[in-house]
Length: 332
Image (cartoon, rainbow, N blue to C red; front, side):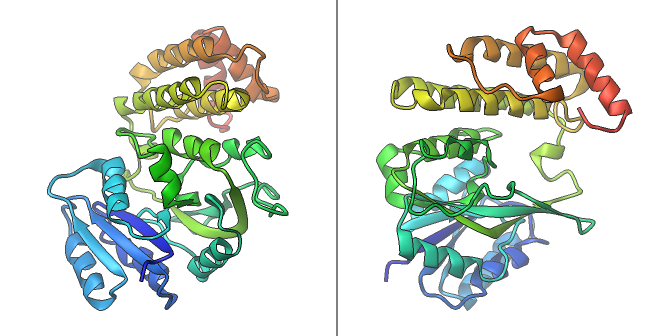
């Protein structure tokens, strides 16, 4: 029997979190589900854990990679083995709330969209929980829509984990995860633009674990944060190649890009201090190159001021503004 839903779970050095992830996915006794767990040459006890789960539950299939492929490579490898009509990418240190798999399967059966966008929440080690989506952003439409009907979807979480995708769409457009950090940038937006139908599930179906350790790229100072520029280059190359079909989304994508760059450069735990000015000048270069001819929706307040400083490539003023805000405890 062909499963309706394949959940691809890349696994690397997450032994302490892996059981919670797999148990949450397997909690409902549906036969419409398969889990393709990809052991990305994990150095801990995760490979043995995966094999044990596969022995207990035939819905779990394990792919052991001979070499570490990174998150993008592991996701692509799992996708190649997936048999379901729909694919959902779930990270091994996260989990889904009770009833999520059933709710997703029910909506897929009802509306059969190309993409189903689900809500999520961020869960911190100290017990804090933050909503992932503004209220009403995922209000159910009367029928599946396209991105042209609700372009604001581009401004929601870029994470692939909040999108359940028709496998046939991925194959038709040849979309896979590009190598490097920030891989969701060139995946999620391309997916939404290409989808012939999008449905929205206004229910928290994904819990994103905000780890206090240095396990995530958002908490790892590194030059690799510059790889975000490559991901947006891929995204805008796609828009250029598809012109004029995706031109209507340029303004929103541009706003998303600059907002994203500002988050990265303003975060103490991402770009190393000695590289921050270089990052800023690089984003200013992208601003000049990619600014839509008809402009874009400039945010108000301090956010808008930061955009204007980027437009002027004014690192000194930006650095001064950032220093003031950090002294006031308001971030970068």
